[in-house]
Length: 390
Image 1 (cartoon, rainbow, N blue to C red):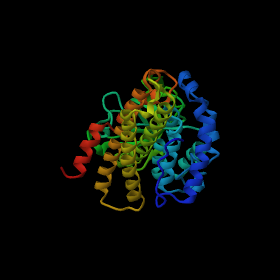
Image 2: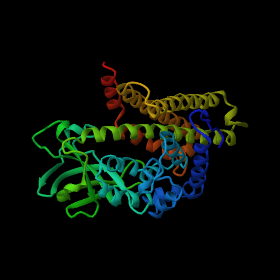
Image 3: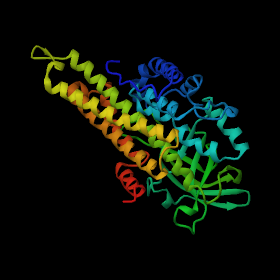
Image 4: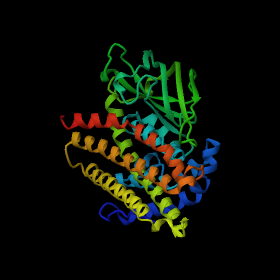
């Protein structure tokens, strides 16, 4: 690592750093050397879930009773950061799809459902996904159209979901549904766990600008019968379930974005030191050194905000609305830093930056999904403004 922007010790204990070192070693051995091949293949071995699960990575933050390891928010940030070091967003996104698909089960599912679903996901045997976005709307959960109508001891689900990470492979899918069709707002929304082998569920793989190694699906539900016992939380009270989920997702994405930006910075420095123009190393050019400093400056600013926000969330410091606003702003700042660093790295690499196989080229393509996924920049600003009373 050429430039490694070190976190302050009051955020991370020695135990945190031991976990980081183990995960960093795993990523360097098991993921980074294979990222290009997996990206070109459009997939990666399912066995990788089981291998990374042995480190305890998938179980971070979950109850020991289900095979998890109770942990604070900084373990989650470390996971996001270290998975990003491979420069392969598709692999990282798929391995982490349970971090958005499983929390509603852990927090709101009945005990029998928790015992059936959580352990095999944390062991890497099964895969969990979240399905909220629909063809007619993204982050506007209150306007979703997928319905789940009660019929005896089942719900009958009809509708579509799109851009679902791990949607093709998922064994368990946490789905946002409307259980009260007469209610057009947030009040009629519920959370429902749908088994991946349910009759009437069909999946179509989607081709994307980036994240090639991650399967992304369009899901269709045609009279899919789901047991009432798969309801997560109370009927018609699922809106808050998904909103809380979004906040955690956005914080994790912010940490990842800073790490991807750092990958671009390091690749650009390495290239600038090796590449010679008119008899001099590229790094000797003042304009190049200034670009590199600009990249580091943006990473430092974004990461500082992410860590400070995480500290506030961890210790429950501040008004909840203010924390939501800060989360929105952290995601914007971090993904903008990622965008800037990817652009500058490709520019410094020149023709090589346009070639497949460089980390910066891949991250350049993957910037937009980070700026859109989990809530677009425009939605983040509007949400932050409302939380701030503007």
